[in-house]
Image (cartoon, rainbow, N blue to C red; front, side, top):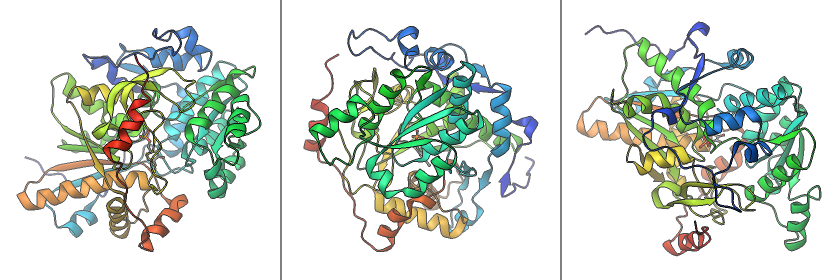
Length: 456
Ligand SMILES: *Cc1c(COP(=O)(O)O)cnc(C)c1O
């Protein structure tokens, strides 16, 4: 066996970057269930979806058969400004843990938005521009998606209207200002600018808002203005497709050094980074060519996979969006306010939900104090200050590496490091002060969420 020295960072050359995205649905025997019209319970047609989303993105959303989809030249050019992202061998972490495991992470935080979300934002903005639209609307919670989209819209000179959950708008003024610097208009939600916002304000004066309510406002803003469509930064099939660039680059980098991972780990909020990272590897597994262990990591306070139901549910709290079949805690579920670590969406990508239900993927839930402990341990040896979301994957990567230490197995572990945590220092402060606590919903809490599931 030839032993090539593995560098700290494996970079690809520009010409080795993927020219096509990979659509894992094409290789799935059991396809993800279709989105349903909430009024008729019939599958959403392309025409219905086209009233809310851009045409080409609707085509991608509904495409269960083409395995490869060309990445347009304009998007590839933009990718070249911040990609390929490095695949890093975590030598220092391995040494600290004294593990025989080999740990790699794919780092997506090397751009101003600070996360992988830019990979899909630029694609969605491109298709909106090509359709001749004036602009797009969206919601943002923590702010990463809104930031990524405002960068993408600036690049293509599109108008960008972001509805930002009011509590984040007030508590994260720097995120808001980054978006405005890139030309986006940022409205705290609920607002007086939409019918649904005015209605919510009347019923709940003084509310600090929620993601579900911001989605409803963004959808109304898109459908009531000429030349606008709504875009979403996670959960949808099209977003997983764009994020496959992460997995394709990872696979190309590993292949260069003849490395085959045993375990691939990612954090899961709506499932886009995990879906993107594992897609090409999952394709090999689905086609019977290779086997891998895939692990989705979610917070114990919002455990969609590990304690949720696989059922049709609303994608938003306002119940204006189509129904999606997914692992869900119910659209009325709101994680405890003590939860600081992101990944608070009640549902999950329908593609990943199907793969999980078919036993092709595992899931673990982790508590936030142990997540922040892993984040700090990682930051001190590997240098990068991780986003709390990313630290969920770090937690399980460390746990798996420590298992190898016990058994002496030299497993190869790859995890997705989705972003940096510079805007999350209030959460780090709580952890550093010893004020962070864990919250795990009781079965009764979860039952209350399941009661709101629609009868389909
Ligand atoms: C949004 C986000 C996530 C979670 O979203 P997914 O769609 O599950 O990938 C994870 N990490 C970071 C840094 C994010 O911004």
